[in-house]
Amino acid sequence: MSTDSGLSLDDSVRAMVLLMPRLIGRAKRLPVPAALRSFDLAPRHLSMLTYVLFDGPLTVNELARRLEVAPTTVSLMVADLSRQGVVERRTDDNDRRRTLVAIADSHRKAIEAWLGNADHGWRTALAPLTPDQRALVIATLRAYEEAVSDH
Image (cartoon, rainbow, N blue to C red; front, side):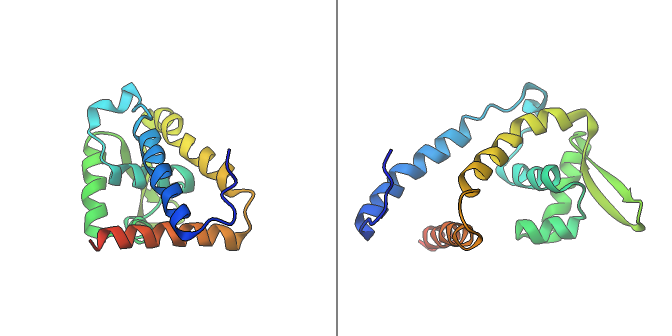
């Protein structure tokens, strides 16, 4: 395993060009649990489900802020997944005016088994880093996303 320290910019780009397809390929090979295959889940659904899984029930506005999309987009996703029984809307016990989005109990185990691996992988990779180093990794990946989406 290479430590990749002291690489030139060109060598760093080559390393990332090799690494990114591997990361994406591994993520795509995560099998969708049988209990969820019929739901036609898109990547945007997975991001939303991951937030709800890791952080517990959240409001549509909070999900929209985290996903960096409009609340109407999240409302549509929630409506779609709610109709299919994957998520449910619950009244917030602390503020009855608020509605929270939660993973339906009937699908929680399958979603935990499926998306929990991403949590473990990222925690393993990021844990040895300092908070500043973690912020740099995230900023770098965001900058890459912006750069390739501009072209």
